[in-house]
Length: 118
Image 1: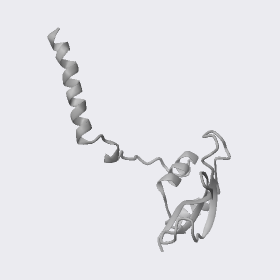
Image 2 (image 1 turned 90 degrees about the horizontal axis):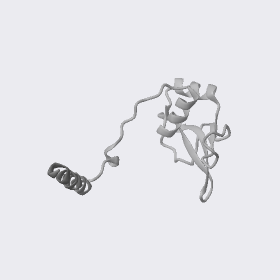
Image 3 (image 1 turned 60 degrees about the horizontal axis):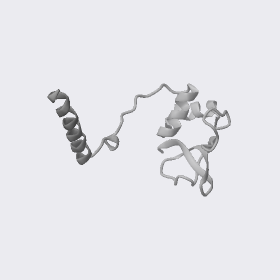
Image 4 (image 1 turned 120 degrees about the horizontal axis):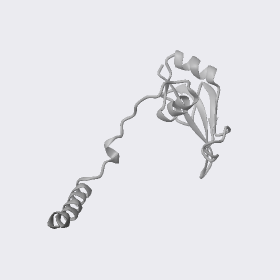
């Protein structure tokens, strides 16, 4: 059984509220879970203590049992000092496309041409 520590969405439309849960990875996001480990309220200020609440002892237990945290939960754990900070890679989605790169090169050439003439 592949275990995940992930977020389960609650709350109404445009007012999200998440529960941090330990669940079987085959179960639906908001469906059946084994244990509720904490809460996350993204509407609160980032420096608020009420924004992320976790039962650290139970999370460490599940991590010891082989549960894998999702990326967002892993960031919460890193901020709490439970897990070591992992190096993340910026995916290719963040890079501009071919046309945007070509436009940037042309703009750089045009900017360099008057500088060379002086």
